[in-house]
Length: 212
Image (cartoon, rainbow, N blue to C red; front, side, top):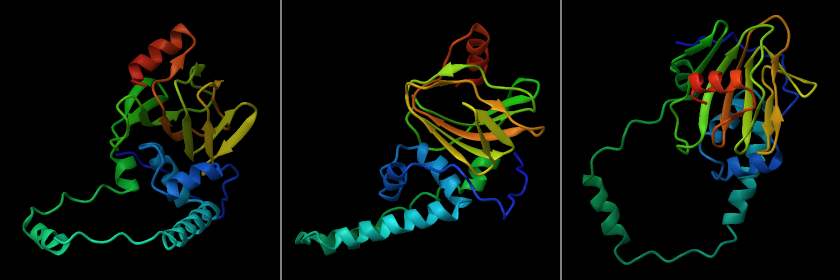
């Protein structure tokens, strides 16, 4: 089981999902797997929770402007018939269960990856990555979009420091080489559209071992 240090209630994220991303999340239209990253960010970000609540309220108001559709003549009978159907499957695991239940796969000393068992496109990747102090990920490009939520420690990318609670969004044409900032390990939750594309031989070997 993966254990995370307790969140500091005084901390306030400095980097947030884009408004378009929050809008898609509120409408239930965000790409599967990426929605888990946004949900994890929302849990620790009052500002983004407030924005999502406002977007949901707006969406509900827009529904009231749609003309109601008439029910089929057999709607009641069809509903009553469903009472005899088997019970629905158990509810999906919550965020804590998903993250804590991930199984670590050590790549090199100080670095492990843990795939997350949540619905997503088979070509996408959703995983936890832990990198020790002073280490970095391999330089790589993307097949598509990438979302990163910092869960603990700090990450340096493109001259910007991302602390625990921050979320980073990158487009498909970005290339980067994130490094751990500070003297603590960094654990991040990632969702990537397609597989990552390492640009060095060492990176190709590491990514093949990690399955990302």
